[in-house]
Length: 416
Image 1 (cartoon, one colour):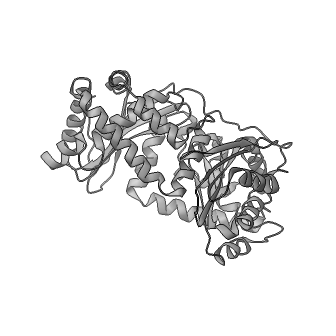
Image 2 (cartoon, rainbow, N blue to C red; image 1 turned 120 degrees about the horizontal axis):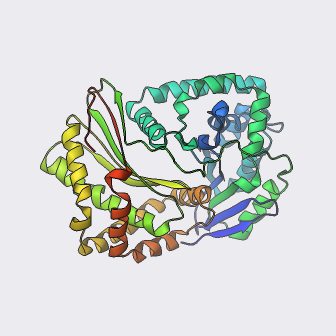
Image 3 (tube, rainbow, N blue to C red; image 1 turned 90 degrees about the horizontal axis):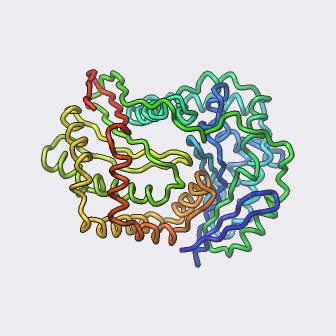
């Protein structure tokens, strides 16, 4: 599966994957934006725009006019904000691609930002924040990232944005819009039964006149290093089990080999029902119900994470710490081929969904302009050597590189 890539004269990237005979097209636009790029006085603005840009234009005067056009043809739309990305997606039947390109470009480029719409969406965002705060695992995950990144811009916690969102003025929002909604920070990513030249033609038609003259710079630089690392954070919480999360500071997206090795190690420790930690902590000792292990990438930094819930956090931590410390001697060459096969097949299973292909390419754009195709990614996994895996373990999965987050009923002091 290969993608095609072009750049329009205004700097907008166009990325497409043609899927022959596909009845559905996924049309998305991705921005290098997010709450990591926001100043303290702008916290939550990107999330607010996730809502506002579907609230009306001159051509489609309000939220209802935007949505009825999609709903009447059975299309689906959504938008997502994270620390370093903002994207909007429409899924539609192949006969309505041109119409949905028109709608997407109109909402992104011509939003009216009416005072009434702004105030209404502020209320909706407040409701969403309250709902998320009420989700123990979700709010804990956001709190953990806040303390993992500590004083870095990526530490911003969207759950703390209520005050800045509520006092945001239309003029402030218009200025913030000019800092992220520019073609040089954006990519249109499309999957469906369209040749690349047809996708480029649609982008030229609907995004080609995108104005770049009024762009403003972001006030925050996420490329700065983390200079004040933490090793431990505890939050008292009367929940039934303790949330235990162990993270390691790892390299950013450009360290391709290191991150592929970390992906393989994450699978070795926590994939499915046969990962090393799952076998030890659930099957053998009954200390946990489930466990996650993954390597999370940002442009300039990464985070290798192992997380679970338990009523025996000290015992579970000691076991995880022991297993990770023993990895240089316990990880054997015979496991590597199995892990590669596992990683490749799970990746292929995931991207069999065309919307996941769009996410793979869009995420690649937002954190790294040098995008890997699915085929290139698979070949890169195949190329990882045993020696590279061991080197990565010794360099990154060490106690001096560790951050432990604990949220539970008792103040547990974990010995690092």
